[in-house]
Structures are given as C-alpha cells and as structure tokens.
Image 1 (spheres, rainbow, N blue to C red):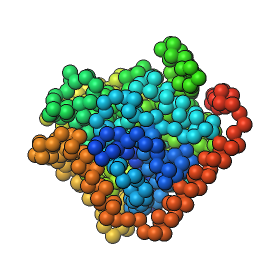
Image 2 (cartoon, rainbow, N blue to C red):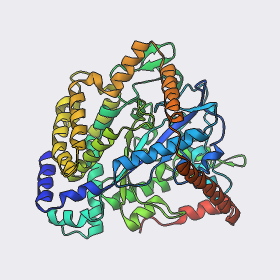
Image 3 (cartoon, helix red, strand yellow):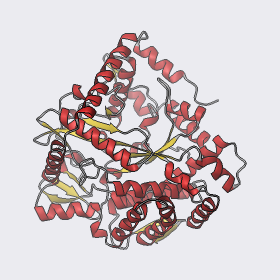
Image 4 (cartoon, one colour):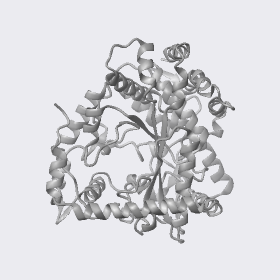
Length: 526
C-alpha cells in the first residue's frame, strides 16, 4: 500500500505533474449547537438575521433548529477556506441573540429530554416540508440525541487537469470519467482502512454530559457528578454512542465502484423495513417519515466518507452520481476542535489533505467481508480506546500495534507533504505532518488527552468546561467584528435567501404527497 503511493508520487514528479496536486479544491461544513447562556439548548428558531436555512448558501441548519451549519465554498487554498469560515462566524455572532452562544464541542450540552431538541423547519414549500419530514423520521427511527452531535466535514477534490496525466502515468485505458470515479472510490476504500487515524489524532470528545447517555452508563466511568468518560477514548462522537449507528450495522453498501455503490444504496432506499412499516407514514395529519424503507434518503446512511456530486434542484444524490460521476469526497470524521474559535485548525486541514492524497495514490483492492469486520473493529476501538497503551488493531487478519501502523502511515505521507510544499515560502505541510509525528510519540498531547487533563486540573465538569470555552469564543469574535463591507454582503445574502424561500413557497403547485411520490419516482438504476 505504502510503497505504491511512493512510487506513484515519484512518477508524477518525473512527469512534471506533481504540482497539480497543490491545486485541489477544499471546503468545510462545520456544525455547532446554539445554546442559552445557562448551557441549555436554544429553543428559539434559526435566527432570522442569519437568513433562510433552506436557501442560504453558507448558513443553514443540520438536524435541529438549534444545530447551525456553516458552509464554505470550494476554494483553492486552505487559508482562504479558513478565512471564509472565520467571516461566517463573525457574522453569525454579530447577529446572534444576546442571550445565546455557540456550544464549543461535538458532544451536546446537557439534555434533560429529547423533546428539548427542536427539529429543524424550513418553511411551507414542498422542498422545505420534505427536509422537515425527513428529520422527523430520524427522530422516530433513532431518537434526537444522536442527531444533536456536531462535527466538521472536510470536502476535497483533485483538480480536473490532474486526472488525464495521472491516468497516463498509471497506464490505464479506462475512459476518463470511469477512471476518475474508480480512483475516488479507491480513495474511499483506503480511508475506510486507515481513517481511524483521524479520530486518533484529532478526536476531541472523550467525555460527555451524563444526561446524554440517558442512563446507559454501564460501559463508562464516572468523571464527576454530571460527566462520564472512557479513560482512553479519542472520539465518543465516532463511537456507538454517537456517530456509529447500530440500526444500520447490517447495511451492505458496496464501495467496489460507482455502480455497485449507487445500486446498493438505492436498494436500501427502496426496500421496506418491518419496524418502520409498523410506524407508518403519518401520526394524525403529520407526516412522520418520507417512506417506510431501510433508508428514507441517501443522507440517512451514516458513513465516515461519502462520494459527492453537486445536485440540481430536486435531484436525488444517487441519480446525480450515476449520471455525472464523483465530483469530490466528503470526509466526516472530524470532531469540532474545541480549542479553536471556529472549531477547525489549519494544521489539521493541511495534514488531512495530504492524508486523502495518500489514500488516493495507495493500492486499494476491493474490501472483503473479513476485512470489513476488521475495519469496523478498528474504527470503534480507536474511538473508544485509541490512547490505550500497546493497543492492537487488525490489519490483513492479524493484530498489529496501533503505534507501529500509525507511524508507517505518517512516514508514507512525507513525500506527499514535500511535493505539496514545493515552491512555497514555508514547508507548511511538512510541519503539519511533523507536528502529528511528535504528538504520536507523546499520546498525552493528543486533543482527547488534553481535554481530560484540563478537566482534572480545573476541577470542572464537561458541561462547565465547554460552556467556558463557548464564552471565550464569543469574546474572541465580539472583539473582532466583521468589517462593514462584508457585513453588508452577508446581510444581502440573508435577505436574498429569505426572498428565495418565499418565491419557492409561492410557486409550489403540487400537494406534498404527490411531490414526494415524484421525487422517488426518478430511476436511479437501469
């Protein structure tokens, strides 16, 4: 795996193509809970001053009315992405009601009752009602607590002019679109093999409010009167109390290529599921599910990485993929980094870019059933025990030390980081890699270890600690107001988005049930 990546980097360099790796597109989607100053989840609607959550390009909601999502466009440079995210935060804080803050962690604030997590609403258009009904379905199927967890998604694509030269270097005779799709899926398969490295290095959620567990504390240790934790956890968000969903454990979604992926995902969306059929589609007059199948829509499948294609209005993601191929990948394994006001660090993104390129260039055979089991074991083990001394993971059917495997991966990234730094004033990628190499040698410096250490030193609960961080982030942005021109720009975006939502609502002619039926009538398989 690692020797092939190094060989391909060398071939790209000799062909004069390595520089094209530096011009990929990067983007971020960062979620965060709106809370009251007392630390409880906000019960107010999505702030009107932010614009319409349905139509705003950069400020929306995820599952809950209180779970904001800030989105950047796809940009050429990491610093541009972070600058844009910073500006969105500046605007959001400027328009945030005075009695509210943005929670600073992936794992939610204190939750006394699921009903206190308000499901997002998007107005009266069919599109808006569909988004709301889908979220009601998630509540009925999985409950609301898991949906209140926040994360950061890193979107990445190679430049279009990289692919023809890469195909020539490899010596492939595939049509260019098939070649691109095939290699993006190779990237995804490799991320599934070694993506456990992301929560290990950047996981920031080893502890939760006890209220989140709702009495399911038998596997956890009591940190204090209102916090539970696991001593060596890296990311409870990525564990089976968070992002990893037991209800979907039996789904056999194939990553063998684009067609198998679309076909297997489409089958899950079209296959009835007895438990959901018993629930039915309605509770009185309220639509409580889009359908009674294994998955309502594609986004219900919780995966660490997704192949993506920008969709047209009303277009299903699987149809867009089938017709136009993979455009970029969405990496979903990052916790909100609570030590940064924006929840993201530049050094982490530089590392992740090199890591995804490594996953692309490395050998990526099809995933066997035995390997699938091992990958799931590794993901869960690192999330819940990743800092445990002498921890073993499964590779090629055998147990290997996590520390050894991680070091091999980091060593494999060095040639890529060196290529990405060529011609730059400073070796930013190499430094980002060296930073993680140093942390790997001293696991007590991992973010998850830092959280527990600071909680102990300050004698604070997770709730109080994170609330203090939220207040610090608010002060940071209040002291750095958005300059007037940009503020006017975001005000204009908000006003335009509200007008667009009203236009959608005014132009709807179909009743909602007919709209849903037509949406799912689009064929996604031949």
